Image (cartoon, rainbow, N blue to C red; front, side, top):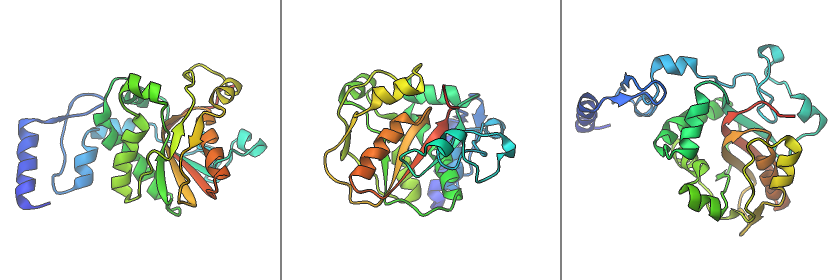
Length: 249
């Protein structure tokens, strides 16, 4: 960053100190470090308390006990593997992450997205896997999009694309059927609810696609989307989510 930009950043920080999006206390950033500027929206104390999803199923990112090992699979994936090939989730859906997600999703706090996307990018890139050809945010039906005014998965995917340098795919995959909210549904009900909900407008020129979502609960939505991608010729499908919840019965 040019010296004038650093001085301006420091002046703005002095006049308008940034507040932590979790505890709302003042926080600061090193203006010479772009990553620090982005991540300063969460103070150090709150960052230490974030429930990172460090031990998880390597196929679906389900949180597992700490002694499970780094290559463990959950019982459900051992019994029947999902359509997607791997999943990575930055956090467990618990503690301070729950209100962050709910505010992003339902309260218009899209200003949280760059900070949360930075955490997602850090966790994904640390896996040192082959990078996908494109990022595909889970689409919303036009009715839900009109009600909410934005798609939280797209708001996360935009900064992710900037951080990773990966292209973002818009409009080729659509939600062609309006579905009832998945909240509160059990696994079988979620699968029935989401079945046939997605359609492909034009083929994706990609062999490896990374689906972007805010929260994966049972995996029914991203699994249905992965099935569509696989049937259209995509050979490898991954899932990157902000948070992963435990399986429901």
